[in-house]
Amino acid sequence: MGICWSNRIGVSGCCMNGGFPGVTSKNVSRDGNDLSGSSSKVSFTSIPATPKSEGEILESSNLKNFSFSELRTATRNFRPDSVLGEGGFGSVFKGWIDENSLAVSKPGTGMVIAVKRLNQEGFQGHKEWLAEINYLGQLHHPNLVKLIGYCLEDEHRLLVYEFMPKGSMENHLFRRGSYFQPLSWSLRMKVALGAAKGLAFLHNAESKVIYRDFKTSNILLDSNYNAKLSDFGLARDGPTGDKSHVSTRVMGTFGYAAPEYLSTGHLTTKSDVYSFGVVLLEMLSGRRAVDKNRPTGQHNLVEWARPYLTNKRKFFRVMDARLEGQYSMTRAQKAANLAVQCLATEPKVRPSMDEVVTVLEQLQDSKDTTKSSQKEHHVNAGPRSSKRSTEEASGTTAYPRPSASPLYT
Ligand SMILES: Nc1ncnc2c1ncn2[C@@H]1O[C@H](COP(=O)(O)OP(=O)(O)OP(=O)(O)O)[C@@H](O)[C@H]1O
Ligand SMILES: [Mg+2]
Image (cartoon, rainbow, N blue to C red; front, side):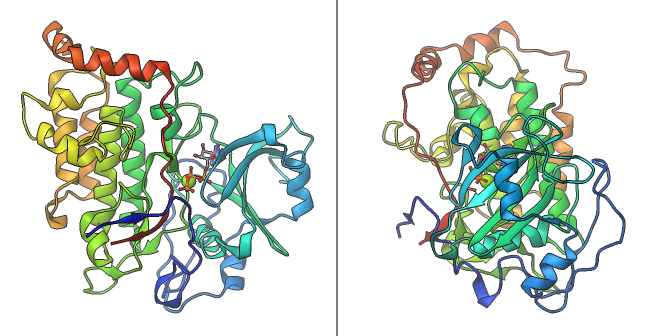
């Protein structure tokens, strides 16, 4: 059984059961608090009884409805040099608005925003655009990116977010260049904890939300490396009542999707836990979930790493050589164990995201007195790792970018 991975999206119609992805079968009940200005407040929502119409979603979101010309001005006519990144749905541009009135401000003044402009080919992505508004318009948490507004005008579909100055975790882990220095062990653990808290919040929210596209490019970082999840286009409400899963067309990003989800289309919160395990492994190893540029046998990170991770004496082979000397043996092993647990083939065996958060809290830097011993350092600095460092430092490798798409089994 093979998996055909299409590079780019084709997501229109991804919505299973005839609904919007994430536009649920339940009513949304907002709590009425204005949480917009607070980064520490958390709001729960959702739990709907009937699917909401597009109008209801847009109205109930409390987001600003921008005109296309406002966003064109805010981004200086979508100037190519203000592109922050490109994804499967389109490009993301830097722009400026007034912090209080949210009116467009002179470029360079006011509050910085990130404007995602969807490609206009045949309204592809409209459902994901709406799902983003449905979820981020309702859910507020310090570890979810803040959606400020949207634009729906003729064929234009845009989303306006708070600007995340440090960009995506993907860039910090895999981009080479002077701006992207290798992220330290403690920052990686900090980001892992923040992202885990975001997922735990979604899973615990009154209506369980399954994120479904957890990957390093969807973890955005603020100036203090606080992690925030973005991209709810593929999110779905979790099972209700005594149902164990929701059935979906298989969507996501190859390399991150849980095996049982790929083979059955049955989606549970444990599918997200698996994806979290993949991302944690990427953070520990500095390797991409899927990398065709690696030698045969190393293309799939999980398959390659699993035998090492479960061996106490060999798990160091998986660790990123650029982290040498930054972590204690105990902590590294604990983090590796956590990844193994999240990647368990049997979903029930995987920890909940709350449990993941607990373990990661113990791995934060506060009182680490047992920094890497000389012995540990030596183990890491073996011939394999030095060779890898040199290759990676050259920055010449062309990595294929994983992107969300339908995943066929
Ligand atoms: N709010 C933001 N602030 C700063 N940079 C952002 C923001 N949102 C997105 N970006 C940048 O733009 C890039 C593209 O984002 P986008 O969500 O469109 O695609 P992606 O997550 O990389 O891939 P996919 O299409 O699979 O979701 C991100 O990887 C990030 O570098
Ligand atoms: Mg994204």
